[in-house]
Image (tube, rainbow, N blue to C red; front, side, top):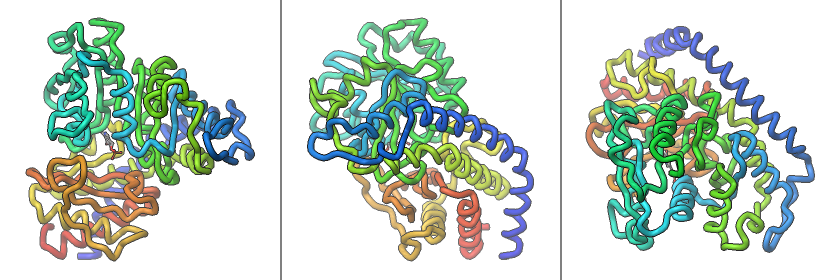
Length: 413
Ligand SMILES: *Cc1c(COP(=O)(O)O)cnc(C)c1O
C-alpha cells in the first residue's frame, strides 16, 4: 500500500505543475508589493528596538503600520500584537463603527462561528452587538455565491455596515474571489454610497494579486497568526482602511484621545515585519499543498471545496468526509505529521466561541497558528474537515502521505 500511496501523490504532483507555475507568478507580484512597501517606508535595523510604558515614539510599530497601509493600498492601518485574534480585530471594527439602531448586514449569509456569539445570534454574552441595540440581517447566498441583485431587498436606511466574509470559514462554500467581492461592493455603492463596506479578510491575504481594499472595501481586518504573520508572528491582528474609520477603531482599542499613539510592540516588530516579508511565499506553499489535498481526495471520490478546478481566494481546503471517525482519523494524522506535539492525539472538545464540539489538529511552533499546517472541523454532519496552512509545501505533502496511510490502515481507502 505504501508504494501505491507514493505513486498517487507523485501522479497528482505531476498533474499540478502548471498550477504551481501560475501560483509562483502570484507570489512574485505579492513579494514585490511587500518588498517595495518596506523600502518605501525605509525600514531599518533600529526600528526593531522597542519602548516601554505607554509606548510613545515606537518608530518600528508606526512603520510597520505604514507598511501594512501600503501593502493593502489603504490610508491607514492598525497592526498590534495585543489584538488577540481575528475575531477581536473584526469585532473592534464593528463595535467602533456601529451605534444603537444601526444595522449590520452580512452580504454572504451566515458569518463565521465566533461572530454568532459576538453579534448575539446565539448565547447571551454581555456586550454582544444585539445587547447594544444593533440590528443584524443577512442576505442569503445563492448556490454558494453572493447574489448582488437581491441586496436592495435587504439594505435600508439603518444599514451602516455591509460585511463580506471572504473565506469559507466553517461553511460549505468556496472563498469569494476578488472579482466577486468587487461586484458585490459595486452593487452596494450603487444602492447607497455612504454604507461602510467591511471585509473579514482572514485567510485571504496574498492568495490573489489584489486585496479587497483595492476593489472598494472601506475597512478590512485579519489575524496575524494566519497569512500575513507568515508563521512568525506570536499573536496579533490588523485593521486597514480609510483613515477616519481606522481612527475610530484605534480609539475603541485604547481610548478616545489615545488611539494609535500608545501601545507596546513588546519587541515583536521584527517578527511581524519578517513574517509579512515571507507571507507571500508561505501562503503560496500552503495553497499548493491545499490543491494537492483536493486533487488526491477528489480522485478517491470525496467532494472537495474548493474543487481542484475552482478559483481560490483563501488557503482553506475542505473535504466532505461524511463520517465522524474519518474526521478524527484525518485530524489525528495531521497531528502526527506535525513538527511539535506530534505525539499527542487530538480529540473533539468544547471550544469557546463555537457552538458544536470541534476537533483540532495543530502541531505548530505558535499555538493556534493556522498558517502552520493544521486541520479542524466541527463535529457535525456532513463532517467536513478544514485543512489549512503549511509553512512549506514539502511538509504538506508529507502530511498528505500520513493521512493516506492512516486512511489505508483503517480501510477507508
Ligand atoms: C479564523 C477566522 C476568523 C477569526 O478567528 P480567530 O480564531 O478569532 O482568529 C474570522 N473569520 C474567518 C472567516 C476566519 O477564518
